[in-house]
Image 1: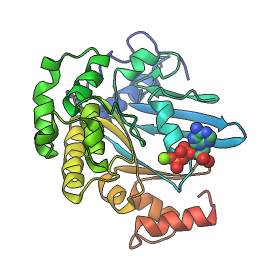
Image 2: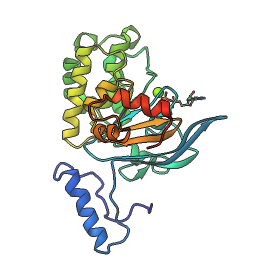
Image 3: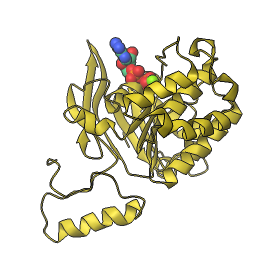
Length: 287
Ligand SMILES: Nc1ncnc2c1ncn2[C@@H]1O[C@H](COP(=O)(O)OP(=O)(O)O)[C@@H](O)[C@H]1O
Ligand SMILES: [Mg+2]
């Protein structure tokens, strides 16, 4: 892949004006007509990632791409490499080999530019227990150069819809697991990310909060936000995601829309994603 070139892609994505589909189509025409150095820039590009922890190989050549407006579900058994992948995308881990880009910016070499687009909900909350919920959200926003005034309307909105109004001035150490999870989600959303990286974001959330969260995710994607979500809740993934990648032992073993994956696994479209998942993972096949 070449470097970012000249005006090949605007500093800010223009998805508010055109749909992703017409945008990439425009790219293809320009490329075919002989322009050089122009390529489609995805919201998220993961290319041939390798990562080991000592002798444990967590990722062995993982690649996938996510376009603006897509909700990409990353699923796989425990230890498949989902969290490792998402930490690399969020700039928290360096890959041994391969690269990850956010809107064309390499998360290692152009970390600051890349991460400006990103909201991240980690799998294990590393929260500042002695901050209140509001202080925490304001702190996360400040790290992104946003002032309290910039985010307060969004903060009020999310506290309302996630039913956390009365927890606003409570210490994080006093919140339940599900409430903590919602606090992390709010902190990721108030920065108005163009790319949302969600690692098992619904763990501990009650059904009402899960519903609210899914609705919010759908709204964001309709505005062009790209989302990658890892989850064990296959039923949720099946209903929510536009595309799914099944990873196993650090490799992509199946990718496509839920319907496509079912067809690949010859499960028939009547099967559930869970059946397909088990078939692929247990069979160890790479369709
Ligand atoms: N910090 C770490 N040190 C050593 N091994 C790790 C570490 N983090 C993850 N691993 C190992 O890497 C593999 C992938 O883990 P992870 O990315 O957390 O998978 P998933 O999120 O799909 O469950 C597992 O075998 C796990 O035990
Ligand atoms: Mg994980």
